[in-house]
Image (tube, rainbow over all chains, first blue to last red; front, side):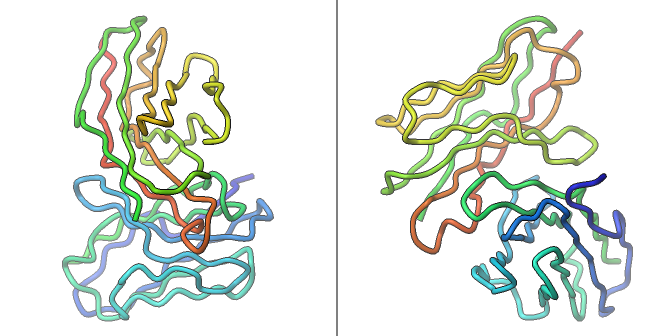
Length: 111
Length: 117
């Protein structure tokens, strides 16, 4: 059983489109995250949710909107996609202040 | 704000040899965890080892061990008996146990390790 699963693994789309990435964890964790990994492999937090409540929004453009329908799910919706949004997006989960377990990543390519 | 610095963008080692990856961090806090994550070409982020700041004993996981120097804010990873499967990007990461910042991992920029046959 996959602990943290996100779909899709690959996403190619045109500029201006709206797209969503879904994430689910079956570890019983109370905290979920979205991280962005850029072309230089740098990992940066985007959002953090604890018990479905938004805790961290790290100066992400408001075209990015996370939604947590329950503690096991954290989806990411992106409006009006731009070329600069191309990156790998990782979902992760943890018990608040311990190690995070990551999904396999979604490689988003905006053309 | 916490920062994590990995000063070695790339390293290489011969199979079966030992290699040490460096990491330093900056924080004013006393309670935190430190981690090393591995990212092979498959892209999956894999936890290698964890160190609690309150523990003086260095963490060990099979061939992987750390040298944690709290006063110096240093957290290096030693890989013994390197294997080809250890080829990956290695990230050092920090998480605070205090206040509102304990809901995010702060990562270094990574060290690309290549194990040569």
